[in-house]
Length: 428
Figure 1 (cartoon, rainbow, N blue to C red):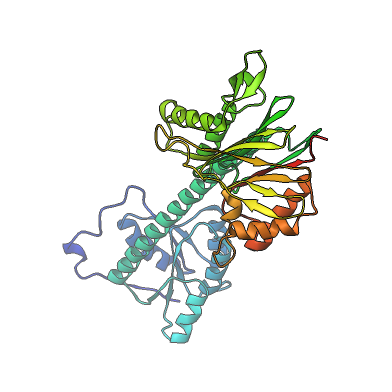
Figure 2: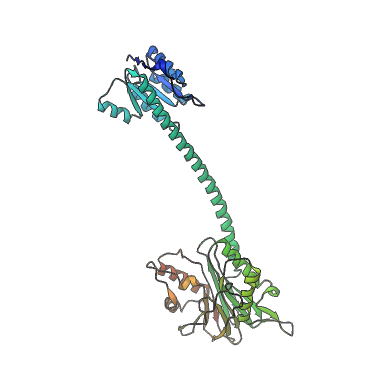
């Protein structure tokens, strides 16, 4: 359709437009009239734009396949492919490179406008085109393009950041998986049989790694050391703390185990658990630069007599289940290790008869909450032990975890769960 430019009456008295941008935006002018293309191109070039022309919608679409114009001015009514059809095809073609699309038309009916917007047009100019209005619409289009491209750049940066974060997370997750395996390897044996009984251990972290540790160390032919540790907090720093503490109670290097000493005859014998914990408390405060503290239970079992010497440092009470199924829980409690220099700890004694068993658990069991937030507590643990009285060794510990999951309503516990079970068959 004929297109004429309404001249700017003030054109000769003021600047032709704002300063040219560093990189001129490209405008595609689409019109089947050569004259109208020349008129539009002259004004756009004078305003500092890089202009390309197309005589039809089909030709314009081919140009857009190779180039990416910033703004498109297209006549609506053209032979062959109309401006509306070109707009629809262009939007389908250009997924990532957005262009501001202005339709030039003599149509003003609201239905026509709605049809144009539905087809992907951003704006309309009514012919004959006013120079002021054309410049204003293009300026508005530039603002939208700048905002859209700034948003796209931010999205790209965000996507790149997320990709990098995912890479870092995957690397960290791999490292944490390896750390988990290493921590689990601290519990070298999950089951050990003795002539006088059997020992089973479990260690289950609430995350990749945790602050719990259980272990044992043979002392001599008739004594066995048992311990449970629960370092404050969770995660890597807690796990590193448990690894370091494991070295002080190691079965692999008895000469470095602070719970052991050499007797007058050169044989290895146990030290009083209360003395060991007090020494460990002062050692942590003087030699370890850490904000962590930990609870500890340390026991020495006499495999011949069934006597057990125990000391607690804030750890849950040991559980004794007698051969007849009754459950006993108790102890002085004590103060956690690594908080106050010079703390002293008490020792107390238990006695196991044939068929009795000793269970030492972390507070991840008794303090496990149900869906309403109520903790299992010692009473709930006693009930579970009563139901599991016919199970033994690792089967009992596995069933205990299952019962705990049923109580909590999930098998994802909020705290680490660890424990060891010593079943005494008697000296026979």
